[in-house]
Amino acid sequence: MPYSSPLFDESIKEIVGLIKPANVLDIGAGAGKYGVLIKKIIPTTETIAVEIESDYVNRFSLNDIYDQVWNMDVMGIISPKYYEQNFDLVVIGDIIEHLRKSNGLDLINYLVYRSKWILIEFPHHYLQNAVEGYTSEAHISVWGESDFNIFESTLLYKKDSQRLIVIKGYINDSVGLDEVSKVLAKHV
Image 1: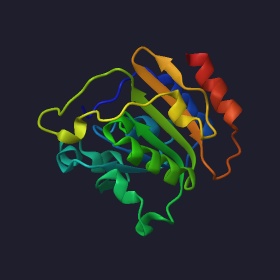
Image 2: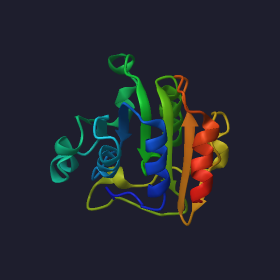
Image 3: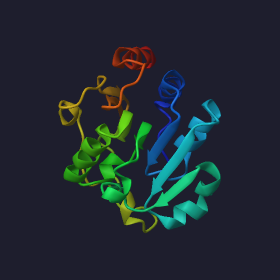
Image 4: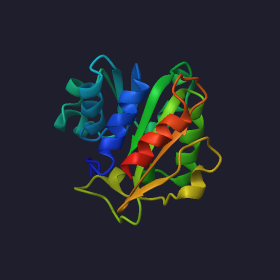
């Protein structure tokens, strides 16, 4: 489905307000939830959406929500064309489970070098096949706490069937991981 769960929205809003990203990469933008959320908090933030389904770009008016829309498979960003791109925040909201596990890990590793923060939200034990004929909507990998052990990150937070973790990228930021962790801890 092109929609994301609202369970962690308050935590995400507070994290965005804390880190004040100048630019955000929203991977798997779907209906544009995170673009709208971020622009409400910091209207000047440059937002870039990656969305594989061209129908979604038009159906959800993503060009009106984001400053740029990259209509492509997310794995395409692991190429020399994008090596110089850096991000204050990368949002992987309800999308990592749509990737092969190996691709998801490759993507996270790639983004650690090119970002300050990576926010990953995903469902747990939520079965989903293709939706309305979109095979990209099928869940094909399972994620858990141990998948993120190699990264400098917050705890993996759990609410109902949703999970949230924030990974510290290699680009320095004045906000520390402990500050982000405190925001998450008070909302869970």
